[in-house]
Image (cartoon, rainbow, N blue to C red; front, top):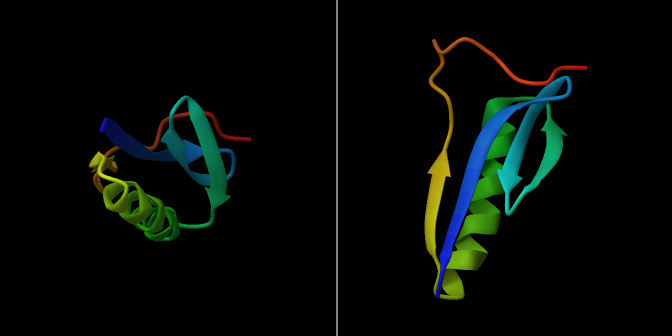
Length: 67
């Protein structure tokens, strides 16, 4: 199986999750985006994929596309 990589990042007025070239969201908080990511990653892991989840640190400056 392949690798399922998820990246939590600023998106619109909140946070999004980037995966396979698409971003879903926005989520109101980074924690909400993480919880949604873990659910999706759990399914991918069950299917035999390796998974990777990345998120910026709290003190990292917020950059990205904001509406």
